[in-house]
Image (cartoon, rainbow, N blue to C red; front, side, top):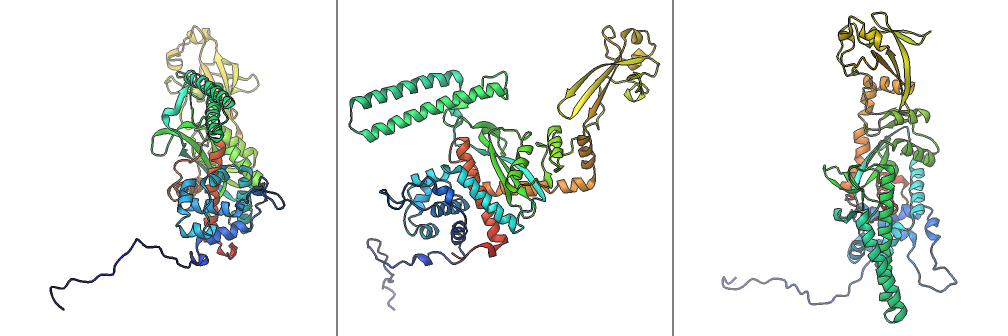
Length: 494
């Protein structure tokens, strides 16, 4: 070889058009998840999705995409962390699994976007069908269920939150804008589609502002906001609420409630609320489980956000064995004043016949009042006469901090509901504490998977009804992935 000769390379020509045969069936391997999704979805009852279809045999109109295709596309998209309808449409031009599902056709992003949120009841029924399949094959047993909430950010900017006064000003401008557009349309008939689009956008803005005012009235009625501040609502997503997020920030978000079955960690129930607190969500979660499975779970695991007297009573009424964070009620001494030994409440003798307490010096404390402290506790108070305590030689030891001109020494007794006492006693036991420790990995795993694997850290839609659909799509995808892993024999051949 001549040392002065230049090397030869294979030329790369990108300025050419090539016609190649394509075998669609071989775009993805036989064990690809898209095939499994297509096969499983095809075996489910999708009739509820067909109720709104207008393209039927014997009538004019454009054909529509089948629900099996659209459901399969969304489940596959969520499994890959894709939540944007536009992104799905873009990837259908080159992504092999999407090409295989749609047979090289491209589904318009508007069709995909509308389908995701317009069939809430049908989607809930589809989720229930999958739950029934998992239950029949012992993948969900409902013997032990853990409930947890996670905050997912709303598709809204913090700056869109305004007070009622500013929203009314914007609403007035929006109403004037709608009226002007309607007047212009009446005067000129050209560009009808553009006029209709502008009018529809203006009416949507007016509707959101009206919903924002309604949400502010609701917040005022619930009195859940800071009383020192006027409540605010977002003008783009009125139902979003400021919540503490896992990263410690404060952002507009929704509270996603997930109940996970302990048998294999699959999701037995999912719901979305706009209440930042979990305190009142345990009973609704168990009631939803009962409505779906026609029975309550045998055991329920919940963290401290759910564990309160009311939740303990509600679980006891439903026959559910609750394991929650031990409250330690009654473990700490009560009373604001420090009394000398021999003069605390334990030294006062109770006489049942007269319903009176007798102090160590022989003075009598008569029953003064009873009051309820929530649903689980009652407080009873007995007081001595002020004259008896003023004349007593040991008042400095027994009555520190008491204004004896008003009344004498008092004794308060709090009676706790037996179900709450039983719960506290149970949670003191090591075996109950050991069982409760199963809650974190069981309840928090689906939350982490949905956020990290499905990348659902921020909803793509607005409004409570639509974000509920998004949460259902994610939960449905999570359960199907679990079924593919745990019971591959249940997956038909695509």
